[in-house]
Length: 322
Image: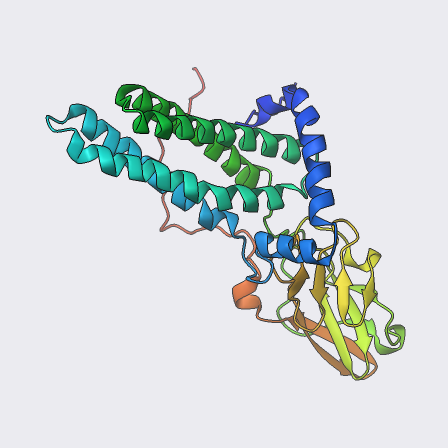
C-alpha cells in the first residue's frame, strides 16, 4: 500500500486540541477586523493589499536578525575575558528583537485570520511557538537588567530554539501548504489572440466565463469596454463569477477580496496580488483574448532544464542481482 510521506507539519494533524485555541482566536480576530470599514481597511494594510505584497515576510527579518546577533554576542560575552564589552550590545539586540516582533505578530495574525482546516492548525502552532520565544526573550531581558547574565543567556538560547521551530512551521505554511501564495490553478493560456466567445453571448453588465485553452476567463462588458481577468481569486482560488460583480469590481465569494476589473488590482484583502488580465479584441462577431504582460506575470510551464544542468547524485541506483 502506498503511504503519504510526512512533512514537518504532519504531526500537527494529530493535535486536535490546537483547534480549541484556534477557533475562538479566529472568531475574535474576524469580529475585530470585520467590525466596520475602518477596521477592514486596517486589515487590508496589514495584509499588504495596497502594496500588492505581503508585509509579514519582510517584518520578520528584524526579530530574527536581532536575536541571531544577540545569540552570537552572548557567546562572545561568555568566552571573553572582558565580558562587559559585549554585554551591552547583546542586551540591545535582544531588546530590538522584542520591539521588532510586535508588528510581525500583528501582520501575521491578520494573514492567519483567513486560513482554515490544516492551514489554520499549523498557523496556530506557528504562533504558539513564536509566543514561547517572545516570553523567553522578555524573561531574558528582565534577567539581564537584574544582573543574572548566565540565566539570561540560557533563556536566550531557548528562545532562539523556539523561534527556529516557529520559522520552520511558517515555512511549511508557505512552501508546503501554499498559504498566501497566489493560486495558479490552470496552465498558461495561448500567448496569441484566440477566440473564446461570440460577441452576442456577452450582454451588457452580465459576467460570462469562457476558456482560453483550459484557462477560465471572466468577461464583463462595460459600455464599449470588455474586461477580461482570471476567474479565480489570487488569495485562495475562489471562483469570482460566483461572487458579486458590480461597478467594475469583482468580489470573491469565499473571503471577500475585491478586485478592480480594469487592471486586476486588489482593492480589499485578504488578497494582496493582482488578478492576471487579458487584452481583448472584438471582430467578426467574436471576442478574442490573449494574456496581458504574460512574459513577466504568468509562470512558464514546467520544462526540462536541458543537458547543461546536471543534478547532484549522492547515491548509485541499485542494480538487479544476476
